[in-house]
Image (cartoon, rainbow, N blue to C red; front, top):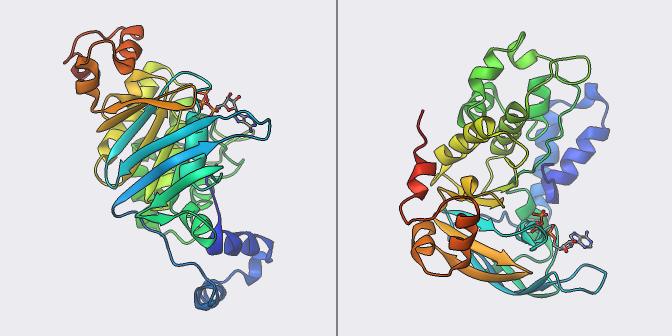
Length: 303
Ligand code: ATP
């Protein structure tokens, strides 16, 4: 579910409560200007340098430590993969880097600035998030996309669909963007839903795109389509791929292996694979990849 917060979030929830006839562009402009002029309005948080977790510990209320002393850096513009077994704490890391959770100890820093107070809410607006399950309204494709950013124009909508490799299948729907989805409308395949979710996340022009097991429920053909779209985004924005599948980690610049709440290995995928007895190498071996260089088979799949 896309994350709303901060000024934009309050504005969006407020707009949701205003009768439709009052929702004019002019009113929206005035509200936004007023919100921006507020002296306590947090400055927008951007990601230009790096996102860092420094000495982060986290525990849910049951008293157990889910994450222990985590140091992790995601360089701006890079694609990082966070891999590890179920229950390792990967989704908890995602919630910390997106500002949904605050660390019990340590700090999450965006360009050196701690994610605390207003900066946390403001940063949440900069996140594009695609989860394993995508929520779509029983409404048109257009409305489902605009939910992420009501003021997006046609060019931006089409651009986001394009980047998510969803333009063609949407154009092929009975009424294109006006096609109704859901119970009384068109049912999309899992892969199509995820590509719409990706388009919706991209429409927010995120500084950080998080894919949390976004392709885990898909068959290999659909997974490849979604991952090819994500691969096309490499270098255009900062991407954090959370996965227990090797196929999704294949094009990461850096892989981080998380086990039992601890970071046990970090590095370039090929270098980690070449290392003897490493955790990533074991992870690859468990998924049928043994020799260095054989990740290329995943990167350039036969057509
Ligand atoms: P998976 O791949 O299965 O999603 P994960 O690596 O993402 O696992 P997390 O979902 O971050 O792992 O969970 C890490 C640990 O924290 C697990 O032991 C889990 O049971 C626990 N946990 C997760 N969410 C909560 C919560 N809201 N309250 C209490 N414990 C939680």
